[in-house]
Length: 135
Image (tube, rainbow, N blue to C red; front, side, top):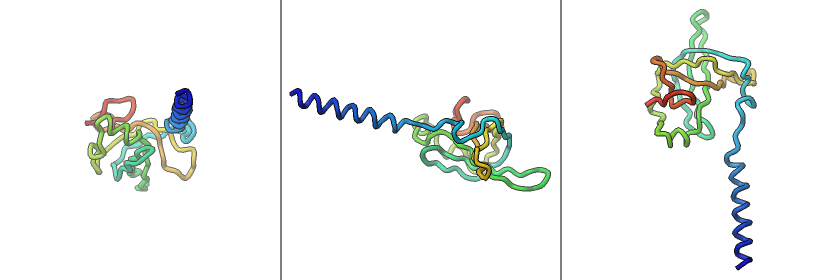
């Protein structure tokens, strides 16, 4: 009986150690420079609904030069959003969104940003952290 208890204890400890790795997450500061901020308004072109984060592609046209830039706004994990009742279809392609005070990627050639997207009426898009869920 003691042998089975020891095996169960070892298996349990192993599973707990493995779960720590599963929930590990990078910090925002690891990928994004929180001192370099960008604010933009644009049109949703595409949403990558995949792990470990969703990415909303927002096309922004510069009013002065006419140049188009596509930012990839990092969002939450798809599974967490799904459990909150949030679905990709809730932010249709063509929706106008604003990202205020978003952190730029540390990589100079990356257009990834981290921040909250808001709809024109001020509601958070796709249940972004820090705001009411978009439903």
